[in-house]
Length: 255
Image (cartoon, rainbow, N blue to C red; front, side, top):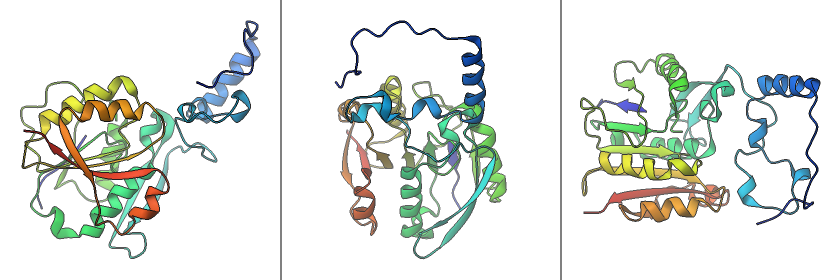
């Protein structure tokens, strides 16, 4: 969590034999896991018959990302903001920048400095600090705050969805959430946290996500009980990222 202060497809066999795994195979798997922590989350087309979107959890990447620093500019076509971002997937997929986080960041930059000025802002589910999850990633977030000289206005804290909000956390006027819809057991916890943070009629929530699985519909069924929403229509890049199954929504808490 970043707080910003104001300024069914079946397998192609029915009953596969029990695999025999040698100690060498186990050692090889462990070595590959160290080199590429996300490899088991990617789809291997050779293992499935047909194209089942529920098998795709993490998009294909050319290699794993470990301890790198990248430079991002927003808006992409006319840089207004430029940030350095440390990314590291060794502690999980939250340690890298994902598409919905970049879409949300680009939209905020498009709105300009006046859009954020004077607001108390909370980002939930932040892994790197670029709008996109757990305590092992707090170090990366803090490094990114320092890397961009934001210590005076941004603080990093741990917040487990579904737990009581910190008593000293200022009520946010703007909540940011990007790429938070990916782990089904956490769906009701995220809805609960958003509901407890938001004040009906006064808290703005920008929620950006990329549709990856049919299970996403269950999240929005839960969300609908507490919030209404509409798609952000003034983003000039909307048609581009919509083609990539990314949506940017404005959520409003129900009375």
